[in-house]
Structures are given as structure tokens and as C-alpha cells.
Image (tube, rainbow, N blue to C red; front, side, top):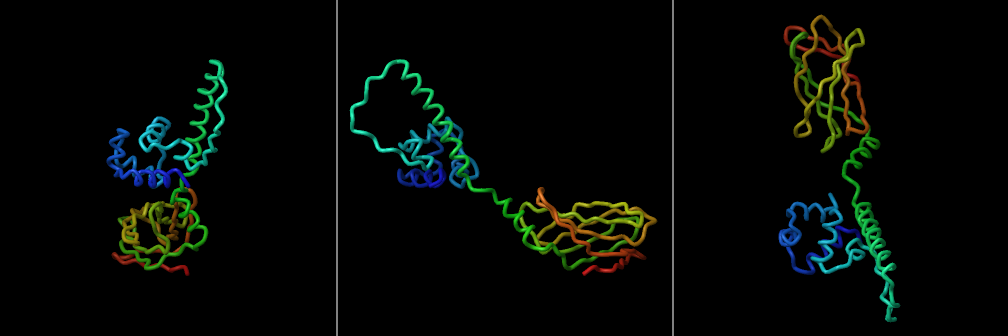
Length: 221
């Protein structure tokens, strides 16, 4: 079992609510909630406090099997060996803390990158309105949406100069306004999606022009 699974089991076994356990540890209830969902792990002092509050060893708390205890009487120890036991305990706690951290689930963002790799990026419902030299309204619906994704719309003029505009989305539809310089007609339009790690582009229009508040363009299939 992973650390967060053991924590949930032991807290419920003792009949503690998240808030009651948080009070015993002098932390917020949100901190306990994040530990139990795997969003974060406690630091070393909090791990020790959890072990004591739940009456469970650090090995068991981090999901590690504890070797059976021998019935043989312990051999006499010198003071020197006692120091080694202290050092070894510190090293063991550090290793257990690392094991708890490595046992955390992967963040959801990794699934976003996998989605961008697996699904071709397209848009639908493309629409423009406005007049060259002033604010140009745009609207489109991406086929890939979700938390962690952001979008941009890129206008490229005849000289090859590009104007990159952030495209906010709400309810799966992206819309906004872009100010383009006057004197240029026939923009090429590309839309970009990114999760901050990888990005995908799709060309959506050629020869975007404006006249008397109306827009015309050649869509790219």
C-alpha cells in the first residue's frame, strides 16, 4: 500500500476525522486532505508525529513490511553502538520519507500531454468579424479542452510577421478580440494549444480580410 492509502486506513481505524487528526498534529485539515489524496507528503517531523498519533511504525505508515521480531534476548550494547543506532535511525527515516514521496501518484498534467500526443488538434465553428486596423473579434471551438491547457491565435501578414494573441476559453469555446495593424490584408491564421510542455498548431484560414465591418477568409480543411 502507498503512504496515503495507509494514512486513510489508520485514521478511520482509530475513528479520527481529518479535522481531529489535524488538531493532534497542529496542522490544517486541508494539509491532512492533501496527504490523503497524494497531492503532497508530510515532512520528517510531521511523519514522526503521524506515527505517534496513529500508533503505527514508520515502516508500516509508509507501506513497508516490518521484519518479524526475534524472541532471543538482545546482546549487551556498548555506548559506541548506541550512537550508530541513532545515526542509522536518522538515515532510515530519511529513506522512508523519500519512499513516501516517490509513492505519490503522478500529477494529472501528465495525462494532458498524453492526450495532445494521441489526438489530432482541430477546431470548429471558426468566425471573424471587424475591420482591419481595429479590434478584430474571433471565435472558435477546439476539439481538445481541459484544465492545464491554454490557447493562442496567430495572425501572419504578407511580410511574414506574426501577431500572437492569447485566446481565453470558457465552456469549451474560445473567443476574444485582437488588434491588428492597418494597411495589411490577407492574414493567415493559426491556432495553437499547449499544456506548457508541448504544443500543437493547426492552420485554420488564409486571406483573412476586412471591409466595412465584415470579414472574409478561406478556411483550411
